[in-house]
Image (tube, rainbow, N blue to C red; front, side):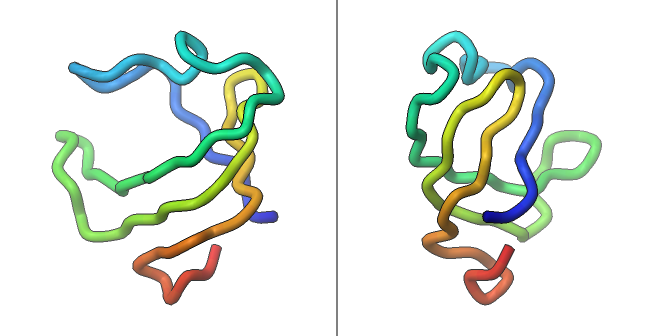
Length: 70
């Protein structure tokens, strides 16, 4: 397992994870790194995780711009 992902709130047009998942729910995720203006900067990751209070644990990385690493 890698470091948890955290995000306060949600981007315009998207719901917060806490509005959809309960603590302990498995989650398939896709994450894209963005700059301060919300523009993608090239780093990305997809994987399987578990929703916890305010965080998404990264249980298995399925693919990433970092050679499928954490």
